[in-house]
Image 1 (cartoon, one colour):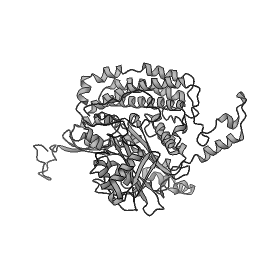
Image 2 (cartoon, one colour):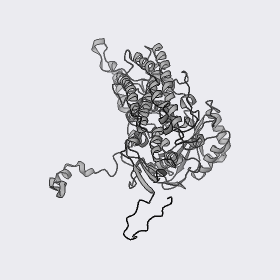
Image 3 (cartoon, rainbow over the protein chains, first blue to last red):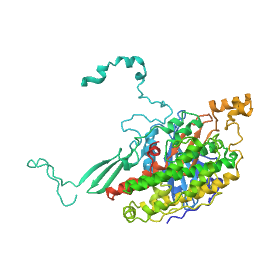
Length: 185
Length: 418
């Protein structure tokens, strides 16, 4: 039986203080925006940071609710990976963010949480961020032979493989009915 | 492989005898019991599943990318099409997230909150009815489908009355309840439905049914620890005995003002999840009755925030309305134009807003760069994360239990694939 509580153990400020005390110098940036606590840590420490947040008895961030990513193409460390953690024993919620450059990998959280499996695959699929030590890092939503990562900012909405020629009337006119049906006629 | 040695290849012209007990079965993507376009590559030893590999993405439409290319209010139309069995619940999640990003939660009038809650709970009833109908159908309780859809038809009628649409409701707007205020008599019809809704049919046909129990009890058991590790939320988590509901934990709208219980299961099997959802149906009608009473008290009060940056002016003020003698005014027209062409621009920042949708924790993560178009919108879809536990739930079980398991996770592929 897992004990849960609907009382919020800490206010956002207290939670940030507590997290800062626990993580210390690992935190490069922290903020509270609309009551959401978020801390940013370097990508090489992300595993140990999430591990300590999970195993700390006071915080007890038992659930990795969500993993997502944001692309900032103008920055040197282009990709931001965002982990959302939830504690059910203390009704706490926070985000942990980390930044990586294009092609740089992030440690997989699959040893800590099983929910990381699919969510990391989704981030890999959509944003192209590889995860180290992931047991099965394949595309999950898009076809296996797809070459692009569509949630990157440079990706056009209609897709780069969109047959532009098909829109042009010339291209349509070139197709004779016989060519189209082949030998079947 | 039990007992039989595989036949050596090319042995005296024999055909490979049916001694191989292992096979790969491709379930879906066009199989009715997969509740949509889910494909599961199932490795079987006899009838026991040794490995299951779900293959998803057949319904991927790039909803996140689409929302990132449009104004905030445009994005809401896509949310109807994610979990299409309970569209208003998704709409409510989306507008709450945008309102949180704009920082205008405090300006939303009471009446809008109660209308949103009624809609969200109707969505929960509708979603659970689709689930119970199809779940029953999967396991051979054919009549269940008809009873469930008879009731769902009434909910669709209520949607239609207030929004004009039966499936993709696109209910409400950021800043309030939109201009489709509840029509006269709608609250009475909702109350009539909530009063007449009963679980008797479901209990008679399924809950006490010996066959149903045999098919569901002790099947696809997941412990509370594993459920949390897999990130399960909603009835799947509560079925494992974890008392966790975001409506209680992080009350949005006015869920802290209404009285309801959180049904919690014990065994973590298919039957527990079934019982949890059945009880949730009852709790939803209970919430609806309270919300209808409150909305009646608030009748006549505004349903939209008095915030001209977000809420467009009444159309009468824009173009004039001859029957009521209202003449249009220029300021209203400028306001109308600015909102519909430019939208509204939340300040720079990122926020995460989660609601308890019928399937579990549905959240929208928005990143704003200060323009009218979301820089990043991520949908944390409960169906997607819950489905991730499917391989764990079915491995070692019989193939026939897979159908029960997929039904009990209650996925909507529109939401899984987004």
